Image 1 (cartoon, helix red, strand yellow):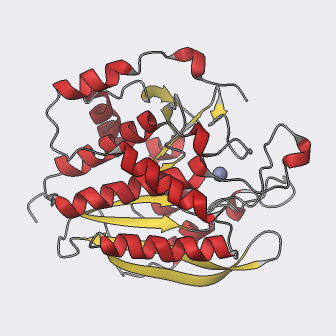
Image 2 (tube, protein in one colour):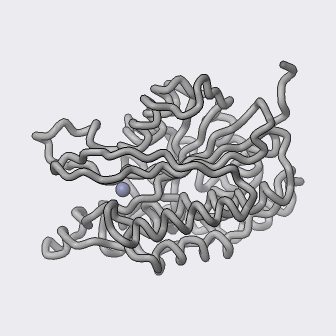
Length: 316
Ligand SMILES: [Zn+2]
């Protein structure tokens, strides 16, 4: 897998560019988001049916509740491709539930059970911290929730933390796509609230790696082109255009695919490009706290917060 590091050196410009633009959103605190990654990593890999998974679920429910969210957990026994059954926990939190016009922000909170992309063959059946692939998106959501409680946006905001996203099979002989994203698949087929229709949804996946570049994947472009262009243009305007790049990429089956199947336009913000593949430490032992970059957390968190705070409810 190729690294992306050689392509860009202009990190300090971000701060200057951001300072020049008047933001409607509160300041997204990247140190706070980083600390939320550390809490998750410290529980151990959040692998379904492990004590670390159970403890993290309890933590996330308590944290979102403490921020004023109306929290519920969607649970069901789910069979994974290896024949095991796990108790799915999709963690959902509604902020300002009385508001009719809403935005949905999601990320997966489970950790893949093994680092099967590690360059060292001997490590491929080992668990790993999943600091970026899982914990980063959750951490950005926690920090956004903290801010949203303090400053009310014009629209309501729902968060869903998906379980069992990353337990999929890479074996070409098993039906590939349907073994991933089991939490969002289940939700799409068993929505707890009938006729739930947020304006749109944004899924976050691997949003804490250094020099991340977020491309415009085919599923997002097909189902939610206006959402994608809105988010990418806000990112450019507020100084994060070197993360949210004007480059298309191919089909990715991530949680946003299943949100779209539920009839909600959804995009994915994910560290992936056709040229370089996923985040360079994807599914390896090196997906750990040492390789989390606060600058990327800031770029994503501030862009999504700004998108939320710019929404003005249309006349009903
Ligand atoms: Zn993954």
